[in-house]
Length: 325
Image 1 (cartoon, rainbow, N blue to C red):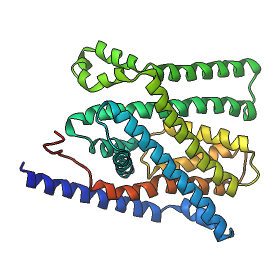
Image 2: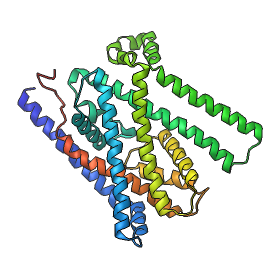
Image 3: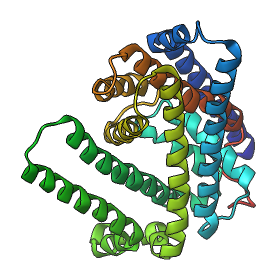
Image 4: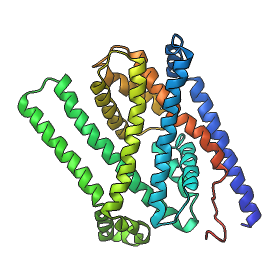
């Protein structure tokens, strides 16, 4: 295939991605009853207050994804150093591709196509390290929240509760030990004959030292705090009467359950809403408000970044060039 043909094919693919993304977003927004509930809740609130609160939530969304860009830049330091702006481009482009792919798989493609072709598979492995760090925190805080949830709302005998806490501690330790010794995964893969021939791709796992893994999980923790704060702000604002500790507990549980459910990001709003109602019904009977808050977060954290990312889709580098190759 000539260079001209590659350019034409690349442009057609990019245009198709953008058109499909906008079509997907448009139809899901039009059919989303939860967003209408969200707008209904805002009708009787002063406009200045709405602008202030929603503005803060949107700013936190940007902080969240800029932190993710910083983490991505740091992960790439072993592979192909990139600028912070390049990291932002790849992160937002990945969000556009993630909305219509199962389990956000398109996010990997959206990022690694900003790398030179020879480093893309290694880039996927490095990105997985960051994803594992985020998953570790989700599971650790979710397990702690689950213990508090059982203590507060589920009547169990003392022995069973102690056993649950013991299991939760083991669960948390497993994830933390595995993450900070992720090089073990490299050793496991090397011990398998079938995967040994691909060691040039996953050998990057052995390069991350504990100090670097700590910095990566610090980025993950900062992100966790930021998007937890978004939920906290909206729930305190729109669902009065709930205790702050209960909101934090239910939010951590919500993240834990969501991380275990496979879905598309655009369909995920329904799953998020049902899960949120089932959890928050223990502390409030304002189910419509809970669903509306969840839908609002979905709009801010998923849809708006995906729309912004369509601009960066046109910077995708599918075939590379002589310099990058």
